[in-house]
Image 1 (cartoon, one colour):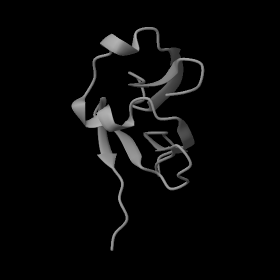
Image 2 (spheres, rainbow, N blue to C red):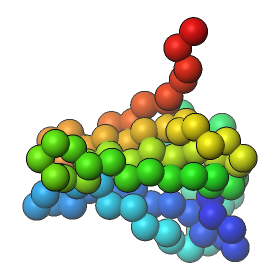
Image 3 (cartoon, one colour):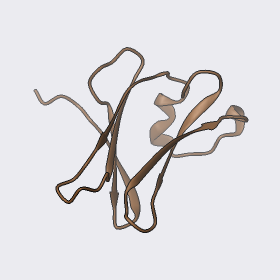
Image 4 (spheres, rainbow, N blue to C red):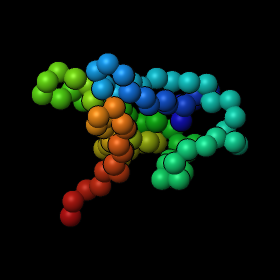
Length: 92
């Protein structure tokens, strides 16, 4: 979620398998459909974002944190034109 009713949209670039991140107008929040996993992040303000480049020079991953958190909380990785996601946690 970004301010002023904007949201983050994450897609893949068909030719390069890179992650594409953009902001889109979030018109109908009440009827938004998505993955249940992300429910706890809906409505939270984006804190920090990172775009990661792999050893071959492609931007195939994206990390994000919410609210005032500086450490990444979610990671999106493009593998074979599909977006995979992981929740990041601290190892104890």
